Structure formats: C-alpha cells, structure tokens
Image 1 (cartoon, rainbow, N blue to C red):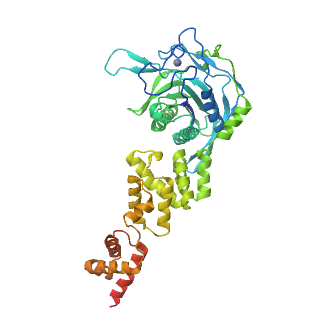
Image 2: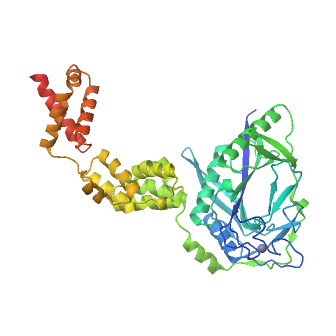
Image 3: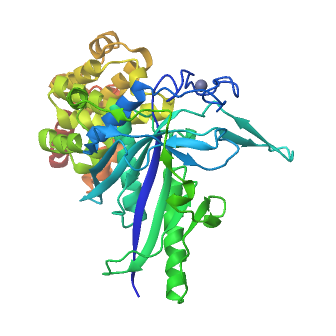
Length: 481
Ligand SMILES: [Zn+2]
C-alpha cells in the first residue's frame, strides 16, 4: 500500500525585544548564568507580570506578514506543568484566544508553488535552560537568563507532504522573520526552534492517521532527516500490520533515528486556565494599520518581481532574495549599473564567494554597491576586459578604492588599438612555432593557447574578441603563404 505523509510544524521564534515579555530584565544573549533575572522571571510569589508592548508589536508584524486574522481581544493563559527550568510551575502562554489565526504562506519546491495554512500565532514566555554536566557529576545546572524571553509560536496546518516541503516552509519562515526584523532566525543558537507533527495515511484517504510529535529538530538538516526517518519507520510499521502510537519522539542526530521520549499528553493535561494576573490584550485597528503600512516587500513576492522585472532565472532570484540585505544590495547594483543580469552574475558569483571566503556580511564589504555598478559600467563600455575586471574586483575588495581609480593607478585600460594587438599577435606567433604548426595542421585547441599567450603578453589588457580575430587573420595569411 502507498502511504502519504501528513506534516505540520510548530515553530518557536524568539522575538527581538530588548527586555523580557513580563519584566524589564535584558534579553542579551551570553551573559553569565542567572544574571539577567528578577523576582518576576524567577517565579517568586507575590510578583505581577506586565506585558511588553514591543513583543506584541513583533507578533503583530509577523501575523500581518503571514496574512493572519488578528484578534482584537486575546487572552493569556496558564499552561501548568512541572519542569526544573520553570520555577512558577506554569508557563504564561495563549490558548483558546490566541493573537492571530488563519494565515497562509506560499512555498516553492522544484519550481512548484504551494500554499501552506497557518493555524495560529500566539505569544508566550520561554522557560529557563538546563545545563547537564559533562564531567559525570550526578546533577544538572539551571540558568534562568532565558526564562521570560518572548516567543511567538507559529503553528502550521498539516498541509506539508514531504520533508522537502517542510524544509522549504522553514527556510521561507526564517527568511520572513528576518525580513521583518522580529527574530534573528538562528536555529543553531536556539532562537528559532522547530517541532513537527507527522502521521501517515493510505494515499487518497481523507482521514488522518495517528500522529507522532518530533522534538529536537534544531537544524534544517535534522528536520529533513528526522522526518524522512519517521516516514520510513511508520510506513514499515503500518505495512507490517502494526499500529502507530501517539507519542513524542526525539531525533538523535548521532544515530540518525528518532527515539521515544514519552507517550503523548493532550492539551487537557496542562489544565489551561486564563491568567488572572494579566488583563485581556486589546488591539486597536489603528495599530494594525500602522504596522501593515510598515511591512517590507517579502521574499516570495520580491523573488517573483526579480524574475519579472530583471529577467533573472528563478533559482538566481530565490538565492538573491532569501536575505533582505543581499536583495537590497543586488537591487542597488542592478539599478545603478542598468545591467541587472550582469549585476546578478557578479553578486551571485564573486560577491557571495568573497563573503563566504572572508566570513563577512554584506554590510562589511569595503566597496559600495555603486563601486560594483561602476565596475560593471567600465566593463560594458570596454574600458576594461572581463579578465581585468576580476583583478579590479580583487583590488576593490582589498582596498575599498573606487574602480576608476584602480584602473588609472594600475594602468589597466583595455587595449583596443589594433596596432598594439597586432604586435602582440606577431610576438606570440614568433615565440610559439609549435602551436602555430599544430593549428595549421587543424588542431583548433592550439588557437586558445595562442590567445592565452597574447593575453599574457599584454598583461590581460588586450580586448579578447579583437585579439582572437587578428590572430585568426594572421594565421590564415600564414596558411596561404
Ligand atoms: Zn526578570
């Protein structure tokens, strides 16, 4: 029997606020353990939470960007459970009346677009962090710096059908979070975390199978591998006539397998009830409209526009728009140079290579987008050759000097004077008799070698097309003589 996977993702995004969601402690990452704490986030008795306005604004930005309906009145609830990193014995979250519901995003896998529903977005506080000793001590440490950091939980509809779709959804979500500036999206630092619900059903059937929740998917790779393993495991189980149990499993990256953590609890196990210390959260229309007006063009629509407006291949447009600073940079180069395709080639090629090699961010480059556009212009009007352009680019990235200055200082102007090139052609023919003989005997490769010698003789400055033509003409004369 053929099975189909049904996948829904729950993503927790740490919101980029300066203080915690219910107290004024800083959210700075990397402080000494338990220094960013106060009686509120340590869960002392008798304290009262006060909601951080900025965390609501971040949640609203996300809700608007994901096309959600925003509740004008939402409430916070207590989710009761015991854990050593949760000193209150409950987490303040939202349950029945979340901030936003019924949104959607459009993902693309292998050029095929698909809409994925967003069930809900709600706000909640993060828990502390347990640090398990690696020296064999029989105890663990707890750090409450993370306790009370604002989170947005984004729950998708079970619309995903493969690990590849889940991966595309997560990449897009991270991109949107970063475009909006509401979360840094770093999965390896835990500021974006993902759990997955996955079940299998016979292909063509409408009813869902029993779902398993997967935890610890803390990288894009783990999401893909964890889901792929679970599809195989559940498929095998069902094919053998077994039953899938509702349970929570953890992905073990070392073994590439999922292992059982606990049989799954249901929502009623948490005994949710409205948080008595916080009034309902009321959102005015004017606030939503103000936020709507501030939302930047998002990666999906921007990608489509790059294809339409600049004539770029889809894959190139996807790479260019995943991160906003790169997309902004590309557009500046494209507009200033009036050569969107050349701009894309340089940004996707040399610029990305440089960023990767030097471990830089786009804002840390020594030269500006205008300088790169200027260099593309010099190439376009023939002042420099393609080969020299690489030299100029290297010099720009090393010194930050404008391209015009580099070309003047280093005397890199392309040679388009026929007489000068003819001299270089003669020299190449005179000193490479063997290659000339080979060409005359019909070996076409010898031509490339001779052009290379001419370029070398002119330190890369000869116009290649001209050098090629003049060389061929001279060789044909030799053949006839
Ligand atoms: Zn605090």
